[in-house]
Amino acid sequence: MEKVILKAEVRKEAGKKTAKDLRKKGIIPGIVYKEGKDAVKLQLLRESLRDVLHTKAGANVIITLKVSGEDKEKDRTVVIKEIQREPIKDGILHVDFNEISLTEALKIDVPLASHGEPVGVKTDGGTLEHVMWELHVECLPTNIPEKIEVEVSEMKIGDAIHVKDIVPPVGVKILNDPELIAMIVKPPKVEVPAAEAVEEAPLEPELIRKKKEAEAEGEEAPKEAAKEPAKEPKKEEKQK
Image 1 (cartoon, rainbow, N blue to C red):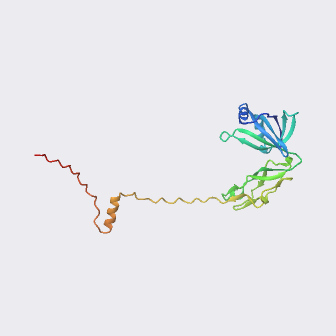
Image 2: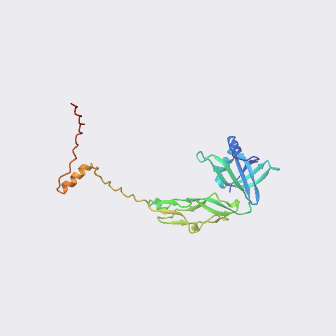
Image 3: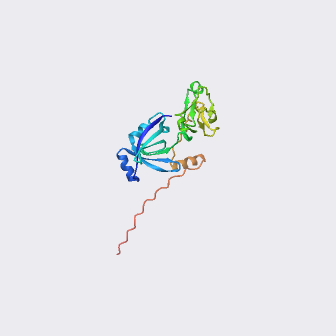
């Protein structure tokens, strides 16, 4: 597992306003957790954190965090626990670290990848579906794999790879349910021709509909009621 160095400072002030002011200056607020000890609030340069995240290890990189502002500069071995991002721009808002020991096993998620092209895809038109994209594993920090790769070249239509079929690297234990399906080759999709649209007759006015019904029964078709002309008001007879 790749290791990198990241510089940080102890953050003395907290709160939303402080965090917002720091981000305007290109500084990201953070915090380091360690089991059984008080958390330490930090601040670090946004660009430095981005560089760390762009290694091959991604978010699983092991970091030597050089923290200044304590009694003396102290090195902490950490992994990233969580990164909070803006919902729209995806900018980094906050980062949480977990301090670890290089001699103690930890539980972490690692990417699951496929290698090769299945026979069922190449010759039969099927599709390789990743049911799982990550595996939950336990290992020493120095044994964290960048990814766990599975050979899929011999897979045919209907073949599936279960968690129990995956051989992890030495020193890595997979914690997921062994009976879960990780990948499967599905048959090609059969396109069903669209049903021909049933042409509907336009709705007829009520009078025409009744007329047709009456003609079918041999009756006289109903006629539209004649409008009675409005009666003029009677003029009052002149008194003689």
